[in-house]
Image 1: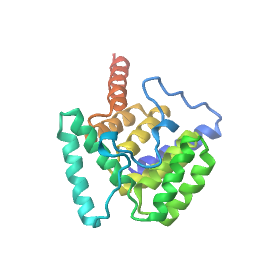
Image 2: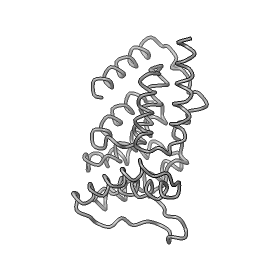
Image 3: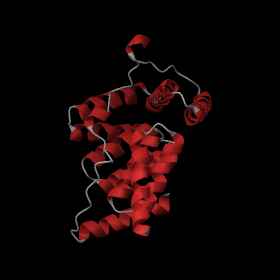
Length: 220
């Protein structure tokens, strides 16, 4: 992964140096937007509103995550998949620091308000205070992507996946950038990795179908 990302960064620097335009995203792949972010995960109304993640031992949390990922990969029930997905995301958001949680909440609000500069300022502090917190790097990677700063986004994606290789959001982000830069085969494989972790990712499913059709057309 590290070798590929450095190679991708090198190609990107060559593209920018040559003033060559980066291909537009196809309509079948939707980049992140402000609507994708909430300050903290919300539970359905019938569950009483905002979810509070209880303090847990890191070893217990990892064990719980492993079980949740296994459940997500195996279930055929959309309701179960939704519940498990939400629980995983809540654990992702749990930094173990009240200060970092507040900063993440404020960063989420800044992203929703389309104040990306403020969001980056807050997330810079998050990764400084909690460099082992994968979601901090993932959130900052996404803001960099929204600002079309793909080089910085890739660096933060690498940090996210080093800490949590099963982070389907980071994998999807990497796949989108790979596709946007013309690395269709790598993009296809990355989308498949994301879908293996979370089979309910509709955008990944659609992107895989389109990339496979494009590959068949090229081969023909």
